[in-house]
Amino acid sequence: TQLMRRSRNPWRQRAMLVEHRAGHIQHMQKALQQMNLQLTQVLRDITGTTGLQIIRALVAGERVLYESAAIILYLCEMHPQAGLAPPVGGKDRHLFLQWLIYFTNTLQEELQHWWHADNHSDLEASRYDMKIVAERRLGTIFSRIDSMLEKNGPYVIGNRFSAADIFLTMICRWTRQLQKPALAYPSVKRLIDLVTARPAWQAMMRAEDIDW
Image 1 (tube, helix red, strand yellow):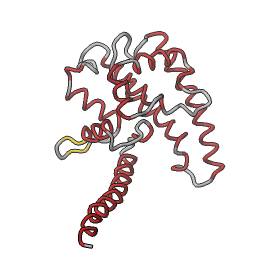
Image 2: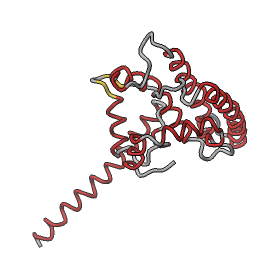
Image 3: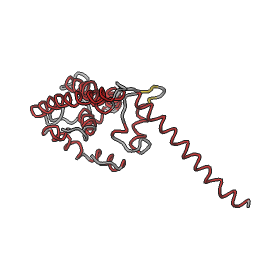
Image 4: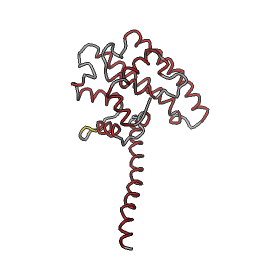
């Protein structure tokens, strides 16, 4: 009947929108991967509250920002009142920049090799070897970071909390499946505990319905 046809139309429209939504989400995920932003490692749903806030932050007018460290620096400079980075010329600015770039160029890059060895070789044996080497190098990298935090911590730039601590904690979450994850390093764990105890971090985790 005409009434039944009218009642079916909204359901058909909804099914069509859901189908189109899945395709758009896949495009978003691919674009983020090309930008070297592995949000799916830390967010279950990139279209959730936190995911959309991050994506909106990547776009400033008609400019699209690439690379995690660049995005962090941009946000720190756009919101200096948050105090998430030492000011230009300020004390510890050099350490903030040094470690932020180390985390993205060295630590994050090695984790990319471990998680996505398939991006570098089509041969299973080669991918296996790459993961073995990456995990060994990650042990060296985390030992260095742990020693630095033990000597100068508890935060990356001493007693001051900064965006570098958030970035490091996020990257550390990628190590959950390693034989020796980040939480196995005492001073790194201390920093992780401090960051994850912050109300803003906990609110983000609840909003995304994820745990460590």
